[in-house]
Amino acid sequence: MEIISYNCPPSGNVIVKKSSNLCQFKTHKILCTGIDFRSGFCGYAISNQLLSNNLDHGKGSSSLDALEGLKSANSKKVLSGNYDGYVIGGEEEAGSISSDRESIPKVLIPGLPDESNGESGAPISSGFWELKPKFNVHYDKAGCENVSSPAVLFLPGFGVGTFHYEKQLEDLGRDYRVWAIDFLGQGMSLPFENPTPSSKERRTTEGKDRAWGLGDEAEPWASELVYSMDLWQDQVCNFIEQVIREPVYTVGNSLGGFVAVYFAACNPHLVKGVTLLNATPFWGFLPNPVRSPRLARIFPWAGTFPLPESVRKLLEVVWQKISDPESIAEVLKQVYADHSTNVDIVFSRILETTQHPAAAASFASIMFAPQGQLSFRESLSRCKMNNVPICLMYGKEDPWVKPVWGLQVKKQMPEAPYYEISPAGHCPHDEVPEVVNYLIRGWIKNLESQGSVALPLLDDTESSIQDSIARDLEFVREGSKKSVNVRLYGSKFSLWSEIGSYIKSRFGKLQVKSS
Figure 1: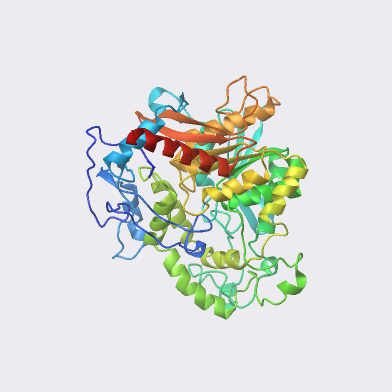
Figure 2 (figure 1 turned 90 degrees about the horizontal axis):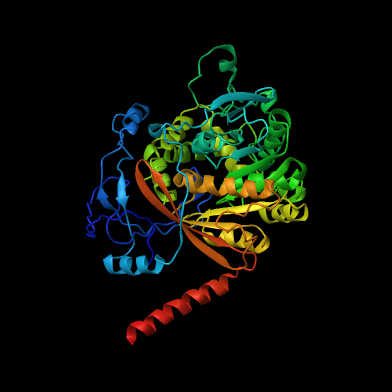
């Protein structure tokens, strides 16, 4: 057993309150079946074993109350509550774990900009960029006055958008020029016209509030539209060339991680480095028509417009389920390891996106889009061949892209620094932004200085490590001290040796206790 959060009550007594609230858990272990990514909003669901206990339920969240009008009158409030902490196991187990961690060095890192202390984050501005007629891309930017600083581009996960990186733009925008974009078909990059209007809709304004994309004939601009990996790679390429206009550091979470490494593989001259935040290692089920043309012809539909009648019927059932506020809340509850994290803004923005008339058909196009021309592994190989620097940051408690996937990348890219963050789930940049921002800053400084500045967690005298080191990173959030464990795996790291060391240490402790 291990502690997956912190800040237990000072008395040491575990106070548990049972509730029907969706954000609370009973005191026993809860085994949840894996939720398919077609029912979620942040990426692929590989498997999930949710093992967490709730302690000391605090005051409720209020911002979700305003969302009640978006649902029918019998809607329930689906997210509320702040938590002082939660652990797996009883006091005896937690105590033994605490003693195991006493020897881990602590490092104090900066928190996010705190306005109460006179600190101000970088102002964020938003805009739209026209990729081509009818294809407007929404983006946020910060720090553009830092003209001599590196450019950083953030790529979001599935179902979210630029809002998921506000904590990065406000903080890192103080040092760098930072952008975040919404992928076409997601966030605020949804079309502003119906790609398949009916003849009646062409003549009148009637039908504006109906679901778009469900007509029988596609408009000329949407005749070849499909929200695919190749479209997003092309979108990123054009955005960098036309808006940023120089090579960038890309940072991608989940789906955004795959797009980041895929883009770097195809355009190494536009990339200075890639940071993967719990990157999903695969995307799409149908074969790519360029890579496998004969096999692709077997499938009657591959995400284009208009949607076939059979898909429309299926979409009507599926969309009603996944766009329901309770379903969105359930997904967020899974992917955030620390349930004290305020996800009100993320929840409301996801829910807002589902209200767009083009959201349902765009979702169907994404789900049935073909794979990219390169697999995740092939993309990594090309990055390695072209000497594109890669940095890996993975939340250890991710129930979807579990640590084994990150370690597979580490095995393929042994020289890439791999930071395992705990407690943190599928979206560490939003859950522990202080830690992720600290690591991103340090990695960029290491590359910009050509190695004269050490990687985060290393001493100035160390250029690299062979095995692994661990540090507890401490920071202040809203007046309280927080601590997160980060382990850096070196170039010679072996998963089997790590398991062996763990067993050996445990066996040694058992011997000491028995004597």
